[in-house]
Length: 221
Image 1 (cartoon, rainbow, N blue to C red):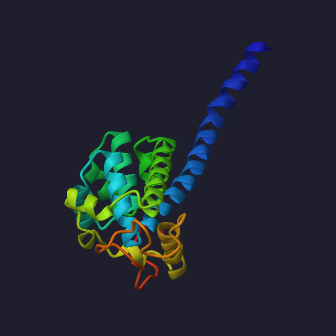
Image 2 (spheres, one colour):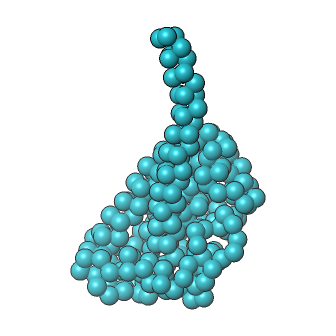
Image 3 (tube, helix red, strand yellow):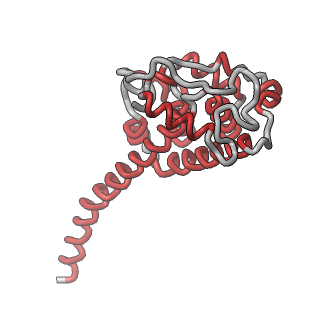
């Protein structure tokens, strides 16, 4: 009787375990999508994009100019760019392979499953990145950082760091939300407030022509 019960339990585990894992991956995929959208939306505003570029470059261990060049080559918004780097890192495959699969219309979760990537690991890194971005935005709002000087030191030109989906993937109300996240922090109650710099990324930096982008794998509508 015990042997029969153990056999039944073993079969149940074989059936249920994959279902539980799939459910966990699906939940992580939803949470990851939310974090990636937050990254991309922050970067829809020029002042936010400067911070996203700098903090992401530090976290990924690459140069700021490399991220700008990759965006020019792929057309990826910053959330997707980060996800592509992370999938490549965790799966130990080439970044270019991930980009190719995104171009083919595959989403991050689909690519991750294909390469046996636990999305929870990428989710953790995405949360860490958003937390660091918020920290940098707070420091800038408090006047603790000179973004223009940092950009010059890194040879980063905000005017060169732009792809169409940065703004076209979002609605005007979402862009307004991004402006609020970037500019209305602490004592910085108006756009272009203390610490926002006086260079090309200062002041409003809204999003003309915000609409919907029909392309797949090119941001987060």
